[in-house]
Image (cartoon, rainbow, N blue to C red; front, side, top):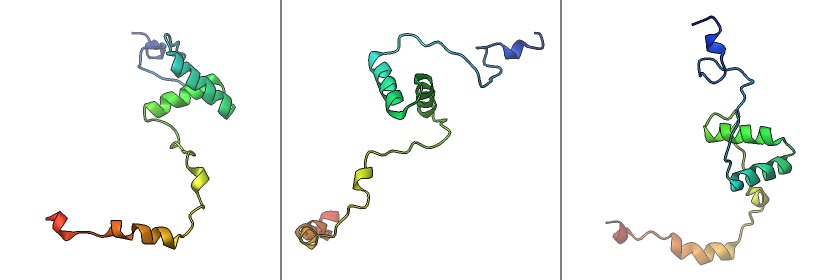
Length: 98
């Protein structure tokens, strides 16, 4: 074993920030989803694929922020009629819990 044996790409002994992989047989739906996300986020396909791999492996740098319910933030309106309508549903029947 020479002094540089641990530096060979692919041996798992040493990692650097510039590892290169070639992935084959990417399913069409995965390819389409990656390309769509890259377009939506204005990022390269490579960057989006690396982020997806990191998230999938649980090693992402930052937690994923979801925005699918952002449209409801701050829209709550008190509605006494609704509260009155569901009041009966909120009653606990002690007989049912025996």
